[in-house]
Length: 279
Image 1 (cartoon, helix red, strand yellow):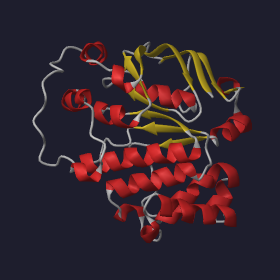
Image 2 (spheres, one colour):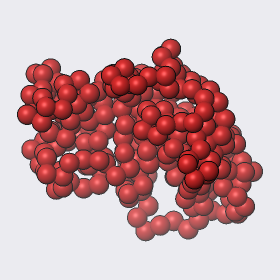
Image 3 (tube, rainbow, N blue to C red):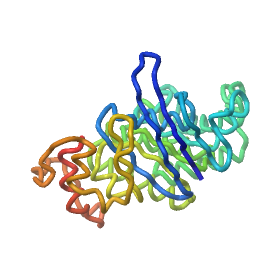
Image 4 (cartoon, rainbow, N blue to C red):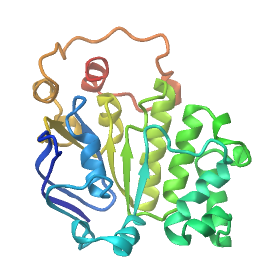
């Protein structure tokens, strides 16, 4: 479905963010990108939808080479890629419903969006999505009146209103507490399964990546140093990705740790280890 071939990014300063990235993402697969800060995770996601222009290689989505597109054709291609941002990217003065409907901007254009002239079918779908993400009671609330978890749910609904084929998710849990983080990751995972969506999730929390992703890709200094299933993420591989650390020491539990009754699936032993040292 998605193929990255020889993808690279060098900034005008000469700094290299990505080097020779080779990845293929099939339909329906949830991939987690992990790695230290500055490893190139956010840059990789933004190169896929061309928010950052790659300097080498190609990005192909369902047979269409995105790196060759421009203007109207690029805008049309971006409709098939839903973006979920770390800082939510909501308009605070607008209501929850208005923020979700802004996901139709790529279809209705700026002026129709500005005048709130959305197709009835889009409005019906927005209602349905807000129900699905657990916010039917909040549709008339302003975005700035929501909690972090609620704001992220609005961002998820907005991305899905585009009817995307691919989700690009940039640190969806970075500003959330542990319980809400798991709820958001579980929701993304469930929605991808329901809609057969592929997803690339840039995430710092290795434990969450192991629990909710089908596949983990580890980046270090802009290069792929691991690509495999969560169960193969050993202490040695974590050292390769992040550097030396005592990965075999179990961290002390935090006061705000998650009540396991909220999630019947316990993390793997390596997930519990990684949770304390991989941020």
